Image (tube, rainbow, N blue to C red):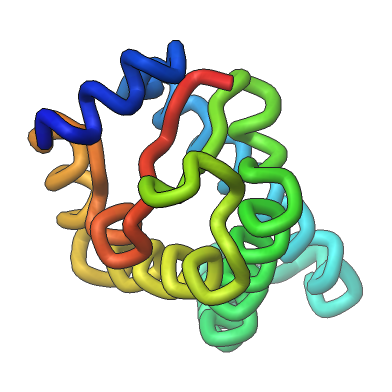
Length: 149
């Protein structure tokens, strides 16, 4: 990790969020968004639908689901510094330069590159697990860190 960032976090009494907390927050957010998608598509499901038909139906809404994820992530990170999952596990996203909530552009950048990381076999998330500052691709591009709240 960059010594300057490490010194700043230490001076401010902040600690990087653990991979375990970040993973659990990710799980909560994914379950919440999947539930919202399920509710939105509920009237399109039929009782005698096969598994293949169900998968085909949900796959027709992939772009809408990705947009929903981007809007959700950007909105909550910009306004609260955390998504519902992050709030539940008591972690937050901060801009490195201000140590505050990311601004509109940073939050949107982070949300878009988070989806990109998911589309590329979650390699951006793996990068974050191996990185000393625990910055995934979306954190690197937005110049953010995830810290304990």
